[in-house]
Image 1 (cartoon, rainbow over the protein chains, first blue to last red):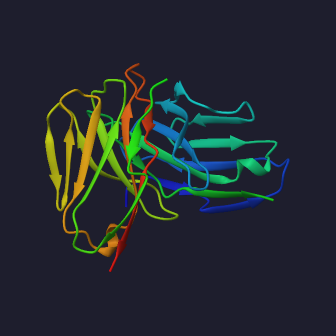
Image 2 (image 1 turned 90 degrees about the horizontal axis):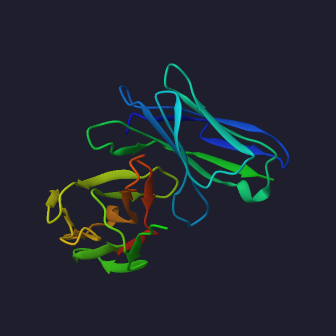
Image 3 (image 1 turned 90 degrees about the vertical axis):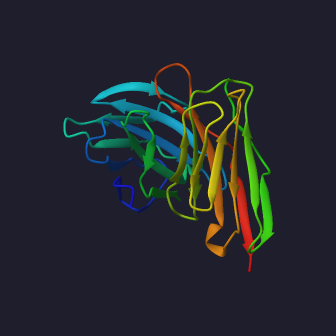
Length: 112
Length: 112
């Protein structure tokens, strides 16, 4: 158990809809990272937050947005969903001396 | 942009055999991380390397930080069926944002 929690575990929705994925980092970690992993693909970095502020952006679509709240949990919002958005979405947290990242169990999103 | 190339892409081995995989880049990195991902789960951090030439073990796993800082190697000795999974290398970009890039992964299958 990495100490990072993600909800929900599975999400099935229709095209055009909007969903929110939630992540709680490990106790004491200030950084939260979001990744997308499509079937049999590697991990694509989406966005990083550090102590409530956006720190780095990757290949995140404009339809996607995220935020980190004062209690350090983070939400990833995906809107106007398309079939191609179906993927595993992982959250990771970090913050040690070398900022290793520890991953949550992921949310499997299926867009029908 | 920065890229991590992993080889081999996949390997089938017999239980008890040793495994070697590597991760290379044209860029220099200050940290190398190795993760293992099992189907439907989040990546789990196996080993972290912080200095060129460093050799670190975690049970049957041994990883090395290449002298040139452009590569890293992971060895698994006496493989067992539960070693099955995808092994990813990761390194932080040198931009100081702690954005990590991940390799393409090595898929390992162990035949009992």
